[in-house]
Image (cartoon, rainbow, N blue to C red; front, side, top):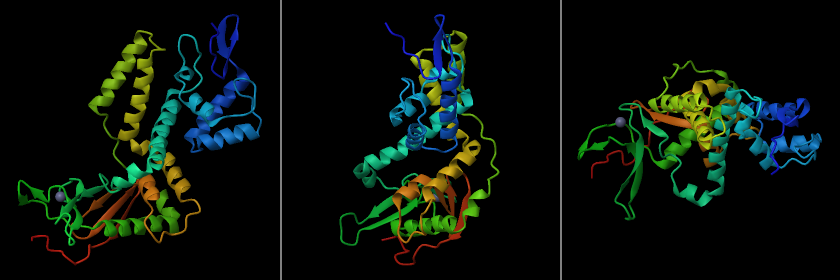
Length: 309
Ligand SMILES: [Zn+2]
């Protein structure tokens, strides 16, 4: 049986050792991916520069670059010397999760359109609840759909009196915020000072499991691979502060060459806005994925302000 040797290693006297030349390609792929380059851009570049791949050919399929980025062997195990730092590997995994999500949104376009882009993105600044869409007079010609705090009605009583917004109003205030960033890119440079988030129980649990597997030297188990991936996802979710640079780059990439918007763009919205918080005084805070926030005054229209009918 022929053993598969990942690019970056070579066999010498029956042992896998680091291939000095090709390992540099692997390291470069990881570093540039983490720095913001896409898999497609990397594969094009490697092909153009005629860099030899695992089979000493110079055509790089993006799937090959993708496989390198997810190969846990580079973290080192009983057969493979360590080539990539854990931190870089996990950062790359986290970026992939994020980009795949964005990609799936593009592919399953119809599904995605059915789902409302504002779901789970709008929050109440009064009680902290999420906003959801309420449909009044459903199916009638005077049907109304407005976004209200989830606690607006609680146990048949009006509980939270924060403002209501129509979808069009949410679109407009989002456009305003995105345009502010497009016209004043410097706004993105204000790195937010955020508390260091505490690790969740789930993340601590995953870390303990990884340690146990490592102590038992089960380096090549699928379980370990899955756990490392899971840890990357959780770490990403829980400590977005550390990803400030990466996310700022993503925003800049998304907005490259984009003129100020004249209409709502779902893709851009989903890719760069993390959440919107509504305050009762009409202030709306828009938080971008890198943690930078922009506050604008946007009071919802007066028409039909009275929801009690
Ligand atoms: Zn509320």
